Image (cartoon, rainbow, N blue to C red; front, side):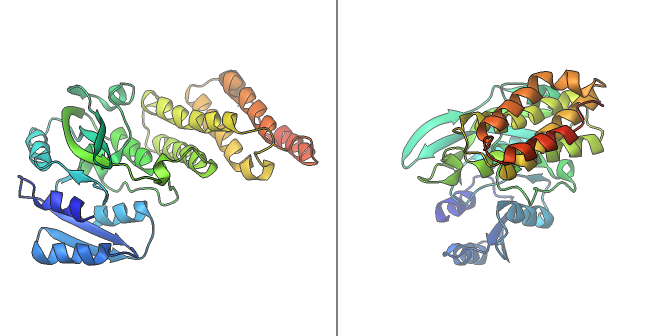
Length: 315
């Protein structure tokens, strides 16, 4: 954390506000944050009970006063001219959201740079382009574009993509900037880099359904949200395919299985097609995956069949 805060304090651009959120840390993070705030008036500290990354970011959003907002994780750090680059590009006000490049670092080794070509795109063009990638620290948002949108408190994974899509759905333009400003540190043993696990896959699915409901409630164009939602659903399905036979509990997975069905059914209604026609390529392969991973040779088989018969396949 000291490296992160020091990289912010030494920025060549001086006019900024840094909100430090102590989310119930049990190490020295809270004390370090207080020290920086005492030495530099641009730093403000907020202490709260542990609520997770979404709660910490929401606290920052509720207390920020600046016109442009970006997020920095405590393990990462900024290039010295990062905020100067952000200020120079955002001053043109040609877009509500800017995407910058980042550098992935492990120990003292630079693994690779992730950066896009310079483009000015509509949100729909952006989410369908190769420039769209998910890490929240790549983006700078105009505060008015965020408005009342907050990170989903019920998600422990994919909450950043869920938030980005909601903000993008209300923007008019997105500018991609081919400048690396952020250093993303990959910690050994970090949960983000472990193999896909059931809770992670289930969170991706819930993130897709939550954004779908948001998009429908806010009359977002289907051309914008269908592909990102389907991608999150298919990530869950691909995870199921990798599970060994009999390892997927029927009771454990029924909620997510029904969520997949709800997503496809909602998308079918958007296109005014019969659900059975729209879902043929999706639903029955999913049933096979679910049966393959469930304890189908136990008494649960009858329960699964009764539940499937109660589901409506046609609009």
